Image 1 (cartoon, rainbow, N blue to C red):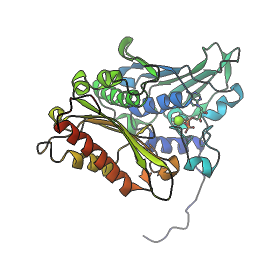
Image 2 (cartoon, rainbow, N blue to C red; image 1 turned 60 degrees about the vertical axis):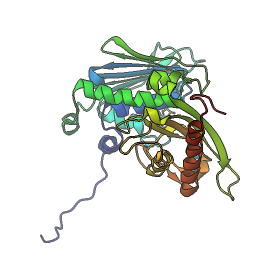
Image 3 (cartoon, helix red, strand yellow; image 1 turned 45 degrees about the vertical axis):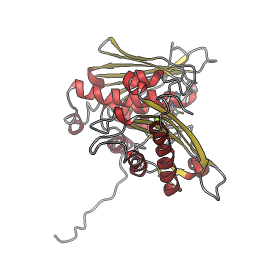
Length: 354
Ligand code: ADP
Ligand code: MG
């Protein structure tokens, strides 16, 4: 076709921009739960209550006892690219919080009926703000316990193309539970209570900060995993020039507890659940001699590296990271786990590290 001369370039309205961003970040109710619970964790919550209705499609309510939001900033929290977590490229390069893009709340609020209410511990009343399909209301005072409550109703009610892709209540709930399991593994110090359709569904008790109590492992995965778990905790220099350490800790299951699928493979990099092919490969290699063909190892591993040497800004939903020292990390994971597995084969009792 001939080039047309009546092309018009226009700036898209904010609501539409947010809805486009929502397409990347908010795939289904589980993505909303993930973003809201991550915000609660970033706000220092010790306890998070999650109420769901109809697989989260009808309602997701996340209430935390974290630091809260200043009344004069509440309206900003639902604006795009507004965040309290970074303010410079330097901050971004060393980011320690789960969030930093300032995208989740405006995205969610543009595709749902949304209410956020918050009170800081020292303020004598709270403040609430409703956003309906991206139309932002006026903040109004509200009685509210210290902390923040976000309510998301009728997800995708104004985006029929997305709504069509939502699955049965059971399926959506399953996705939510999987995210919660990951968050629960990453933060055993935080108490999580979940209800669905008015009935208690799960309670992960906060264990007071002992990251290695196996209790959370049994609560989230199984008693059997815990019974077969080898605890690892090993550190090594990250690279010759950076002067920093990498540390790998967590649990790997003995070969006797292998799986038919990769369903119990959890990797956290600096507290964030991620997928990483190279590390998954390193783990598999470590098990190569001790697992039958086609069986998958089960593991919950925490890798800590200098945040300046990990790029977390690779993916809008932050499912992936990029390492400066990918090769060294791969080899470190492989060697650490291979040694742990060799030790048990040599006869050390399960569950006890030498
Ligand atoms: P990000 O998490 O990337 O900063 P969000 O859109 O998720 O972006 O949140 C925007 C801002 O709103 C956050 O930076 C934070 O200041 C504030 N906020 C959101 N949720 C909470 C919460 N549960 N408690 C306290 N502050 C919150
Ligand atoms: Mg966030």
